[in-house]
Structures are given as C-alpha cells and as structure tokens.
Image 1 (cartoon, each protein chain N blue to C red):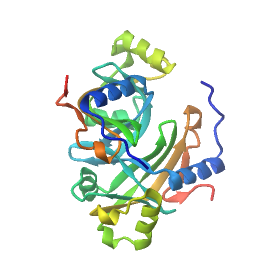
Image 2: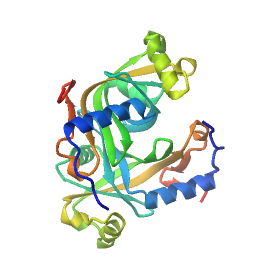
Image 3: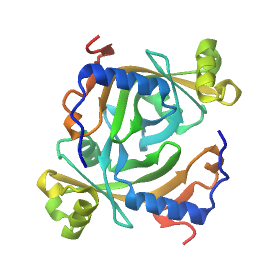
Length: 149
Length: 149
C-alpha cells in the first residue's frame, strides 16, 4: 500500500474540524471500577464541546459520574481524531435547546424524546493522524487550546 | 435512512468472524489511574484470541500490566464487533512464531522487527450489532463460550 505524505497542521485542523462537524458516530471510552468501557454513540460537535445523549443508568454515565475523564475516537482507525477531555453529565432539560435542535438536525433524532442524560465533553487534548508517518505532529489541541490558531 | 431488519444469531456469528478475520485495525480501550485510554492498533484474530503488538512503554501496556481488562472495538460504529476480555502481556519472543507469521501475512508488517510487547486478548464476551434494532440479541459470546455453536 502506498502511504500519502503527512498532512501539515493547517490541513489536519481543517480535516479534523470537518470530521467533527460531519461524522455521526464516535467511540466513547470511560473507566470504572470494573475496568475500561467503550461503546459507539452518536455525537454533535459545537465548536468547543462534544455532546452525547444516552441513558442515565448506562455504564458510560455511571463511569463518568465517578470519574469524569473521557476519551472519544472519531473516524476510522486509519484516519483518526481523538478527543481527550472532561465530561459533565446533565439532565437533557439543562442543556441549551439550540444544542438539541442542532443534534436533531444533524442526526435525525431528537434526544429529548428518548435520552435522560446528556454528556458534554470539554476537550483538553485533540490529536489526529492517518498512517504511522503522521504520528509526529499529531497534536491539534493541548490544554484546551487549539494549536496553530 | 432505511434500516435493514436485524440479523439472526447465525448471520451475526458469520459476519463477526469474517470481520475478526479480515479487518486490519481495532480500537483498544484500557483503564489506568489517570482514567480511560483508547487507541487504534492493528490486530490478528487466531480463532480464540486477539493478538496486538506494541511498545512496552506504551500507555496500553502500562494499563494492562496493572489491570488486565481490555475492551476492543472492531468495525465502524454502525457495524460493530466488541470484544471484552482479559489481556496477557508477553515478550514477542514468547509468542508462537506461527502467530507472528500469520500477523505479518495479514498485515504486511512483522512485529518481531519493531514491537517489544505482545498483547493477547482472551475474549470473555463478544457482542455485535449494526443499528438500534440489533441491540437485542447482540451477545455472541458469554463467559468465553460462543453462543449458538
């Protein structure tokens, strides 16, 4: 297989923001007393947070209420955006209506009709890479601040 | 979007085994004192274990040496196979040569030339689903035993 040359920071930022805006689903990893957990969930990206909707009694929510660190993978395993951040669990009614409208518009399903927990992920670190040759320069955000902006 | 009808157990088993045999990469989730970790890695499936190769000083290996529970996601988020199991970390030289030969044959890269840790994942539970309508009946393996065999 021929591997394309590594993208520069500007291109990775643009590609990654497009992925966050357009991709529908992500892998969500949490940790609890029984060890790691990881499931796919739909998401909305609001330019500064990633919004998930799920059940309050799900393992994801239980883990996050005990330890609010979350790691989210978007894209395929050879074209990855990884968001590492802090999660806040809210009642859906405590989230801005505009967010659920954007979620419903993007995903064709309004969580206010089926979810009883919202998870807001505030990113601290974002990385993106495709092949091995992009591991260097994979940092797009550090300490909650976009690089190169 | 039209959602296809749910697959039966036999079809899910066949599809999932094909995915495990043919897919090249997976998401690997572990838990450590700093919380969840998740990265993409290439894998080989040997019919009863999932084999990963990586660096001994990686976060994945550190987490697994402390707590050997691992969760692996294969496929896209709307066509998922999830393997939940126990991990054993070995020196690459302590793994059967035939496994590395199969790995190199499948992935075009022999970990004996670049990895200093092998992770063998023994599955305890395997689940597979596509859309919401497949969440029921998603269990393919329980307690290390394939269902329907």
